[in-house]
Image (cartoon, rainbow, N blue to C red; front, side, top):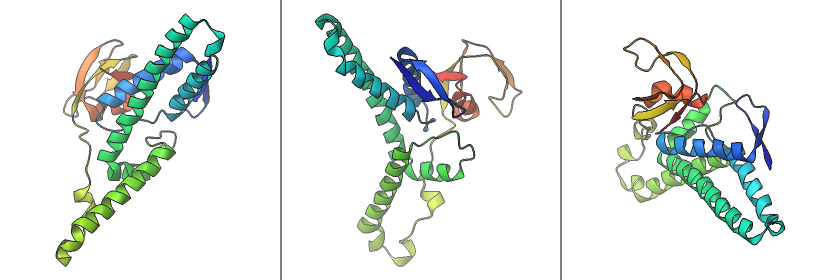
Amino acid sequence: MDGVVDDDDGEFEQLTAAQVLERLEESWVNERLAPYLLESQQEVVDCLLEQCTMAEENSSQISPFAADIQRLELQRIRYVVTDYVRTRLKKIERHAEYALEEEKKKVDENITYLSPAEFVFAREFHRNTQNHLQETALKHMPQAFQSLNQEKSMVHPNLNTFIFFKVKEDCDDVLIDPQETSVSLSKDEIHISKYHPISPLLDQSKIRLV
C-alpha cells in the first residue's frame, strides 16, 4: 500500500506504507520531546489511518496467522497515532491563547502548526476557558480587577528548555548560542542545545529529537 502526502513545498509526494509510518513515528517522538507544537502532520495521520482501514478490510484474504500478526501491527500503529494526537491536544490546551496568536502572526503559509480541526479546538477551548474564568471569578471581583491583561496572562511555552537532538544531514553555519560563533553539524552527531535556536532545523527535518 502506498500513500500520498504533502511535502514541505506543498506538493504531493508518493510514499510507501513503511515510509509513511516512519515519518509519523519520527514526528511522534519529536512532538513528545519538543516544548511547543511542531508542524502539523495531519496528512500523514489521515493517510496512515486510511491504510489501516484498507488493511482491516482485506484481512479476510490472508491466512489466520498472518491476520493475527497484521492485527497486532495495526494496534501498534493506532497507538502511535492516538498518542501523537493526544500529545498535540495537551499542548494546545496548555498554550491555547499563545497558539492562536502565533497563527495570526504566521509568515510562511506552507508551514501549518495547527490543522483546521486543531485551530477550531484551540479557539473553542480558549473561549470556554475565558468564559468559565469570567463567570466563576472575575465578575465577583471589584470593577478594577474584572479584566485581564492578555500579554501578562498568556501562558508561553519555555522555548529555552534544553533538548537533545541527532543530526540527520550535514548543516553548516548553525548558530546554537548567540554569544558564540556558528558551528557545523555533521550527520549522526548528537548534541544538547536550547530548543529555540535549533527549531528551524527541526522544521526543515535536518535534525530529530532524542
